[in-house]
Image (spheres, rainbow, N blue to C red):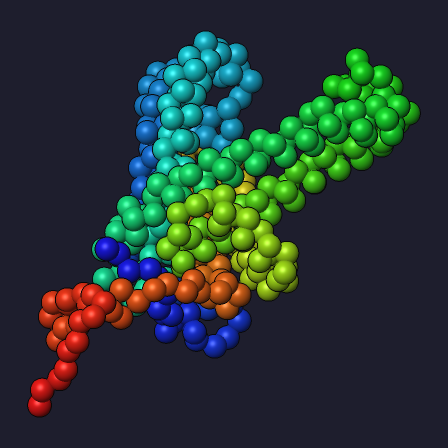
Length: 355
């Protein structure tokens, strides 16, 4: 039987801000986030390679080198409309399957991160990562389905009948036939405010739901329980009791993630701006493409690191605010030497120790 992860990891008890400890811990586990990145990279190649082959064949026949490097011209889009449409249809189905596969891999990776973070695993992190992914897969998969159901419910409430009847119909007086277009409102500013409120509210609920999911997974691993619904309810009450303590480190990690991605996207934009000067120069254009590709993969690696840091942060906070379960000691009513077999004691048994 696998032992519950109730033993505190010495690394989780280190001092310092939660977000910094979590970030540096995730960055230091290079084999793990490299494995996660490699899986996601291979999944993306399944969709990217057919497009690369199609562009290589199409551009190599009728277009000068560098002519369509920075962006596709209107002439190219018009001439190749049928081919682009066929490629979209072919890769769209594969993309949907791969997106679902990436979600399943995300469930597996979550168990791996938590297994490594909640046990003392120095020198065996990759093996324990794979073990944890398999150990918690099915209970985390049930939690994923519950999360998707909640997001669907929130989407229906905000964009569906409840919002339309209560806000658009009763409050703003929009006729039922105009709920989709909002043509009867008095100004474009009102339409913009309504849409902004809907999108902002859903984005907030989306972020809070994902955060709740991370803390629920951590609770299930920490207490070695199986019920996603009961664990989710307990996590909800925990987050309501400790809103600042549970949300603050994840908000800081989100800001750090956004800052790095924004900076690198600006770098990519600057590199893409140089294609005009390098147009016709095959070597310069190829070099820029490779640099952009490397920067893009670094962004993917960074997101993998941040994902691990989020789980480390939830583990630190959860070990502080989640009460451990009181489990019966299976060896209490038994006798046996250290490291050897144990024999259960029944009522009326007597034993002694001879020296």
